Amino acid sequence: MAEIIIPLPASPLNRVPLAEIKLIARRIVNAAIILLVIAYIASFVLILAERGRDIQSLVLYGARQTLSLALFGMLALKIIGALMGTVAGWNRLTYVCR
Image (cartoon, rainbow, N blue to C red; front, side, top):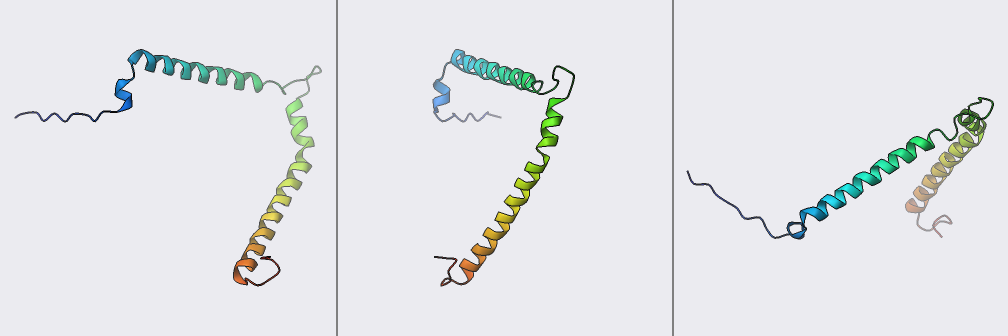
C-alpha cells in the first residue's frame, strides 16, 4: 500500500522559529509562577495580628450586615427592573417606556 501524504497549508506558525516559541513558553511559565507566589503571599496578609487575632474573620464578620444588605438590594433592583421591562414591553404607550 502506498502512503498518502497531505501537505499542511502554510500558516504563520510554521514560520516562527522554535527558539522564539520556547522563549514565549518560558515567559508564560515564569509569569504563572510569579502569580502563584503573589497569591500565596496575599493569602497570609489578613491572617494574624500582633495579639494572634484572626483579622480576616473579624473583617468578614463585621462586613456581614453590609454584604447581606447589598445582596438584598441588588435582588430587589433586579426584580423591579424585570417588572418595569415587562410592563414597558407589554404596553408600549405607558409611562415606563418613556
